[in-house]
Length: 286
Ligand SMILES: NC(=O)c1ccc[n+]([C@@H]2O[C@H](COP(=O)([O-])OP(=O)(O)OC[C@H]3O[C@@H](n4cnc5c(N)ncnc54)[C@H](O)[C@@H]3O)[C@@H](O)[C@H]2O)c1
Image 1 (cartoon, protein in one colour):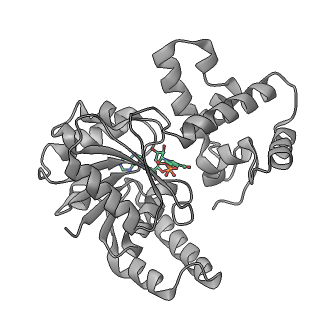
Image 2 (cartoon, rainbow, N blue to C red):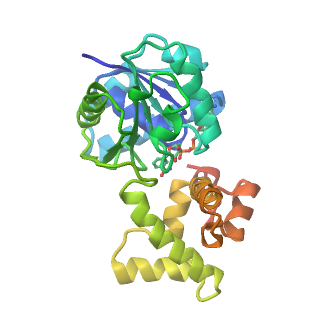
């Protein structure tokens, strides 16, 4: 079946996931509640693709497909109209994601795949409150999706084979390597391992053992990582780390899971990293 794809949430991730879908030849619609951000991101991704053409990573055909196959929509009901495959990429908040899925699963056809790109929320945490729980799946891309060659797929026990197969097919057609988890776990493989590193980096900084810049240098030079944990946090968005820790803390009640005060202050201040121009470091707004 040739999927028609709706991407809900046109931020850093959603805008590029929609681009991947369009470049793979799928008719794709993208919606964000923030119209200005949606239009800014559309142009930003177009410029990115042009840069990648200059670097010979993409061809002109990909840019043409991006323009031909992707359209912007300005309401939730409109973006999912006549779609067979939904990918949600809104802010990392359970309540916001749940409201969206509850609404669309109440009227969308039984054959529709409901995928979430959430970093830590498992599909079962959403599906159990929605119609047709067997249609829900995690489809986890990496930032920036138009460059990062991986999708982690994870699913609740009751997922239908059709949903799993179609999610693999779409991910592969987007040109991505695919790993399929055998059990659900918050953070999947990569973020679960990364969280251990970032938590320890935050702990070192909180204890006053080193400046965050030096911790980043140590990890880059000592472990040969391309980015340090604080740079990486800025790139993914500090809100994502914050909400993930908050969720874990609410579930465990363990003080070691409590988000660090310095992280909370930045998030409440709106200093979310690269996307807002300031996080641990200062940036020109991307
Ligand atoms: N940034 C990363 O590295 C990364 C990697 C993998 C997965 N993710 C996941 O992708 C999702 C999005 O992250 P992001 O980095 O793109 O964040 P972002 O802040 O750049 O984008 C989130 C977008 O959601 C929109 N939004 C919020 N509520 C909405 C609603 N009710 N309806 C429509 N749009 C709404 C916002 O306007 C914003 O544009 C999160 O679940 C995150 O965990 C992020």
